[in-house]
Length: 525
Image 1: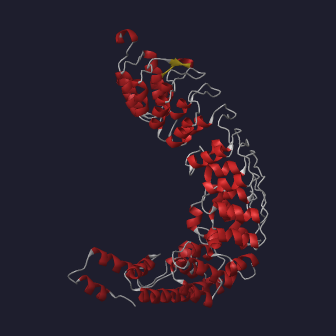
Image 2: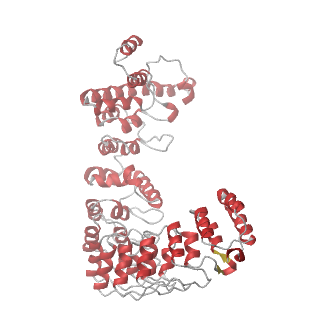
Image 3: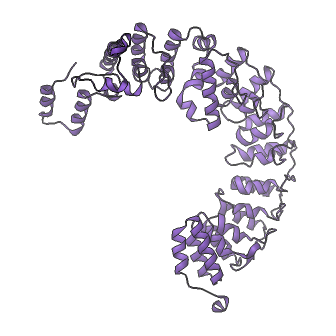
């Protein structure tokens, strides 16, 4: 169907047309890129599925015809056009050309935008472009897997036509769960991975496209089974095990696929049980001497922790960079079911009076990273609230760190439980020093209201006012609060603070400091 200028004008003259109608007609008359697909998607959303499907098939057939016309110029080198020459040829406005400037072929367009029938039509005509990449480095296979329309079916069709000699890839298409294909090629799964795993799965993808086996490893020695255990389903893990993937292969951090099961809560205990029943070893440690129970306490489910304990994992094993027991790992930020896991560990014999390399306790870690519920549980279990680490810092100091969850609630709970406020670390920093530098205005106000001194100095004569100056948050508000509470502000303080604020680019703070008059102690008395 072609809309002529007369047809367009006639529609515009309808009394109920809207700017959206005008835009839609412009898209149809001057199609480029994905605009045609936007129109088809709009038809489908409105319920015109049959019409949309027909238009997609017609679109694919037109692309094949135009694609063959463009590629035929390569038969005669003297007539061959560059991509820029092609786009500059005289054409009528109604012609719908391939976007040669993006190195995209009809198969690229169809794999990304059309339904499965469009892909099959193109593949039935030619497979010449099946291995070509566009400017983004994507092949038609990768275009299919980021498509929102029948991506998996398109992938299988392309593989069956052009990759029949790649045994592992063909076998995946024939017998693997679709979740395995998604793990390898789907952008939605890719986007959920951390950066190192994104690079790894791309490496696995390339290995498979080169004909390598299912058990091929990346440069970091991670295999598909590692990635499946963390990012895919139980069915995917079972498929890889059934097809001979190594259960005990170690990556560059000496971590087996079982470790990957402990990074997630999705079917973690089922995956662990399957691996163990298939021969995976539980008595494994990584390069930092951390064990499965450490990681499951940090990232996985209560059920996974219980499974490991029930299968003989030691609840008091020391591991990781800081020689910590699994209890510490329950106190990391966002650990799921933290209180329940701590209770399970303690019921299973975990010791509460343990310290790491920095002489920190579990309460120190909980105050810094975990929730007020975890802090309360530990206090209720008689954990001392005034214990100190190697720098003489009590748990209260850790409540004053940067981005602490529920900081005020934790501080109030500790103080109500007997935590001392008149404490200093080995460099003479007080709670007010640390909170002025790292925490919020509310925390600073709380300590001032509790009569913490605003005029004490730490090492190198660091004042509390200076601590505000180097804070990442609410600097001026904290300074104003200190000044309102008779904080000493001498010329030395002013000069040092201005120099430091200028060095850090805190222009608003510099302007404020310059406006503050010198305030000596004898003027305060």
